[in-house]
Image 1 (cartoon, rainbow, N blue to C red):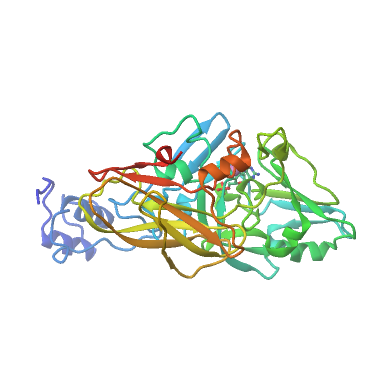
Image 2: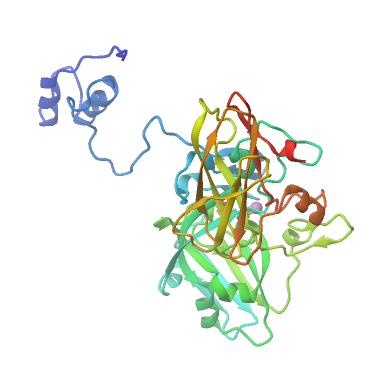
Length: 419
Ligand SMILES: Nc1nc2c(c(=O)[nH]1)N[C@H]1C(S)=C(S)[C@@H](COP(=O)(O)O)O[C@H]1N2
Ligand SMILES: [Mo]
């Protein structure tokens, strides 16, 4: 191992410094000494030098620096989770994908207010301290933007050098903590005849969406916690609406108002956008459910299989309708399928990791995955999706993905070979 030249620190200097006596001229403070030892002698046997001491906040190993992939167009911006770099199912909070229509507002926890009104007996304003007094729940759920997978390719443009992150990185999974919306709606008393709510965000986009009351009363949360700490500003601090299994857009962040109504409000986000033209002149509206989907994260572009032999295909599967019941994998371009192992626990409306060991014999092939959920819904092929939905829509692209493995081991996006 080549060693970096640097100021020499003797064992004696270190010991003297940590005991509180400053070694003359060598280091100025105890923390400097810790830094010097850690940085200047990287190749030393770690059992022969003292290690770094405690810190208030943890950090990643310097060689492990996964990053979100950014896109920004004026005020509209997004960042994508590096799915292929992660393990298990939980997304580290600083790698959760983001989608902001008007940037991230700077909201103070103490100042934030949530107004709940409309068809209710007692309109109320809740401070965060009020919301936090209600019994809280914590649940693991995925969140996916309905634009995930759209935009990267189309029927006429099928690039091969696409990463999982660029294609499907608008997907993350967290443990969300909050109070069920049903608790708060019982508090204000929903009037007979009410059937929808309008949820409104306190950001520069004032993003607002209509949600059926049934869904809201079923399993929706006012989420103020994410993976054990308060929700991040990017995810809607101090509180967001969380609708398990529903398209990302309806999960209104920085939530400031809920209006109980007897019809959908037809906001901008559910008329000009987040609707799916079906190609026959009609348009699908309120396509809120995220249908079952799976992606192979390994092997995927830009990975190169270094040698033939046994490799474990891995990926993620999820469904907004409930649990994933099985994931099948094909290693021969969809001619035959085998059931992959699911790495439990298999939670409803959450991601599950699947694995399948396959022997790569050094021949060109295409690998695919196909998820089925507990309702019997099967992830469609891209042809089935285009037939049902037409070519114009870029939302809800949940069809099977394909990776092509070349004879040399190079892995590229293989959907172009499947259509
Ligand atoms: N108030 C508000 N809520 C919002 C948005 C927004 O821009 N403003 N973006 C929506 C979209 S399109 C998605 S996909 C999700 C993204 O949530 P995340 O940034 O926590 O991943 O939030 C939704 N909620
Ligand atoms: Mo989104």
